[in-house]
Length: 222
Ligand SMILES: Nc1ncnc2c1ncn2[C@@H]1O[C@H](COP(=O)(O)OP(=O)(O)O)[C@@H](O)[C@H]1O
Ligand SMILES: [Mg+2]
Image (cartoon, rainbow, N blue to C red; front, side):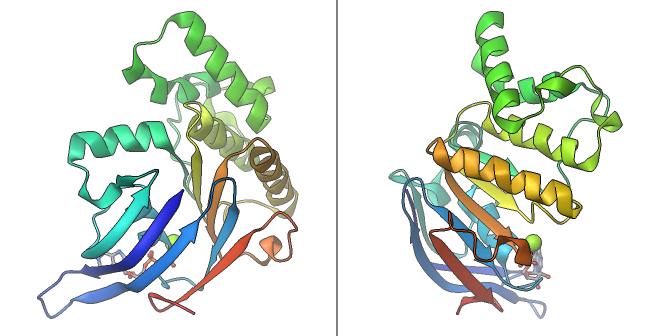
């Protein structure tokens, strides 16, 4: 499902401040795997996720997602790839504060030109999967941290991407909501999603659903 091959990322190349954030990273994620990308802050996890999501171009190497050479997609195709193939859950949730939960979740569907009925079905399904249906009409700014995250999860799922990428998903949650997040992840895995979670939260240690743990340190796999 995801092949990362000899990936390098250097920020500010050919300058005094050149920084090698990723050095020769290679790994594979199979369909329906739950993979943890672990490592202390600064080890390169977010950079790696951003390259897989085609938000950032690598310096060299390849990322192949469903046979697509992600790093080589022109911008227009890259945004379509992000919208259709990848669900991204950010640490800061990145919701529109003044929109309701259901409106936030509708946003990724806008470019698709679906009927209102199709939109309603998809939004309802995503809210049910992420366990946030009871807050459909609530304005995002009035949600608790855990609810904001479940809204962000529903938005990431609404297009039914095969791959879900999560960047430090429990960093802004208390223990109770972090455990609820893990329940949602278990549901998504059971539904067939492929999930990659960048985290340094020990709450993910020893979860039986985890297929692989990829350890990063200083931009390298260890
Ligand atoms: N745009 C950038 N320009 C220069 N350095 C960057 C940039 N983005 C990230 N870095 C550096 O790359 C390293 C890895 O960052 P990051 O991928 O965010 O790590 P992590 O997510 O594991 O905390 C850090 O040292 C960070 O300062
Ligand atoms: Mg990070």
